[in-house]
Amino acid sequence: MKIGLALSGGGIRGIAHAGVLKALEENGIKIDIIGGTSSGGIISSLYAMGYSPYYIYILFKRYAKEIVEINSNTIISSIANFMMNKKINIAGLKTGESLEKAYENLGLKKGIRKVKDINRLPLVIPAVNVQDGKEYIFTNNIPNDAKENDKYISDVPIGRAIRATSSFPGIFCPCDFKKYNFLDGGVLDNVPVSEVKKQGADKVIAINFKSDDIDENSNAMDIIMRTLDIMGNKISENSLAKSDFILTIPTDGTGLFDVEKLDNCYKYGYKVTMENMESIKEVLKD
Image 1 (tube, rainbow, N blue to C red):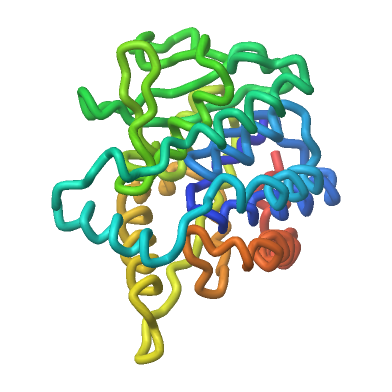
Image 2 (tube, rainbow, N blue to C red; image 1 turned 180 degrees about the vertical axis):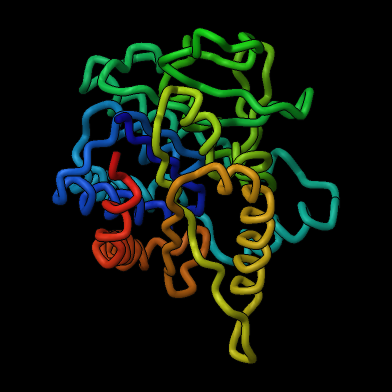
C-alpha cells in the first residue's frame, strides 16, 4: 500500500509539517508520495529531496527571517488591499528571490537542479497562473493517464517552483517562468489531496491548520489570519473530502510571518501527530 501526504499552506505555521513527518517516521510510517502548497510545498520538496524532518526544521529556522523580512503593518495593509480589490503597487512587493536562491543551493547539495531531478519519491506542488487563472502542478512524475499534459511541469528549477507556489497575493510579486506568471497555489488548492492520489497513493493523510478563534482581545492580524484560514479551508473542502485522514493542527494564533513562534509550531505538529497516532495507524491498515 502506498501512503500519500498532502500538506497545506500556512506561512510560518508550515514548519509544523516537519514535526508531523518526524512523528510519522518515529512510528515507522513510510511516506511514498508527498505534495504541498506554499509552505507545505517548501516542506514537501525538502523531504522529497532527502532532507530529514529535523534538518528541515533547522533549515526553516536558518532561512525564515532572511526570506520574510516583512513587518505586520505591511502584511495587514497588503492583504487588506488584496481582499478589497484595491490597486496594489507591484514595485513595492517582495520578489521572492531570496527564497528561490536558498532553494537552489539546497537542491544543489543533493545534486538537484530541477524538479524532475528528484527521484526519492513522487512530489506535487501546485501554483496558479495569473494569465489564465488555472492550476498547474510542478512534479517529478507526470501521471501516465494525465489528460491535461500541459498542466504538469517537470523541467522547472526547484527554486523557481518553490518561489512560485509561495508567491502569496498582495505580498509577493507573481513569479515568472516561461509563458507563465505564477501565484501561491493556495489560491485554488491549499491541500493537494487529489494530485497526491493521482500519483498512485492508496491512502492519503491531509494536514491543515485550525482557524484560531476571534475575541475582544484579537488584533487586525488575528482577524486577517482567521479570514485566510476560512478562505483556505473553504477552497480545500472538496480536496479534503477525498483524503482518508485529516490532521488539523492548532498553532495558537501564529500569524503568516510570525517567525518568533516557529519553534512552537514545530512542536505542535509533532505533538498533535503523536496524540492521533493510533487513529492514523488504524486508517492505514490494509
